[in-house]
Image (cartoon, rainbow, N blue to C red; front, top):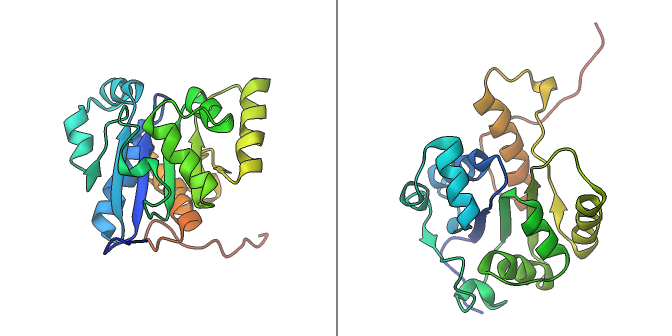
Length: 195
């Protein structure tokens, strides 16, 4: 199996709120330079980029090393022979979660996630929904049982973040920890002592 000069990471942005997580992840990965990013953006993800960040498709695509059309189920990412360290779906819509949990590979995002699961590669899903209904919870359980990491991007208030960006970056630092990617997005928690 051929390997890239830099390890490859698949990043998908879907139609849940919180596209800033995917965008800032791409920005940090570009700055760090340690992995080659392969980007997938769903049509609803494109809509949310515009609504939430005033950002167009081309602007987010410029942050990635390689961009793949979501409808191209014959792309390299659709095969287990495409070597990668894994995949992050940030944010992960409930529709995408359901498709992954049930092996419904109807586009390149869900197929690439399925490949990560079958090849036992890391698949990190950042679901964004509240409140959660029983279908959401069952789909999270099913995805977890197959090997995915369910990682809701929740603020770590104990770090006393000074900005929204700091809260986002703290979550993304933990995501990069899941993938074994060295970063500078936060320090290890050393515990707290009572006053």
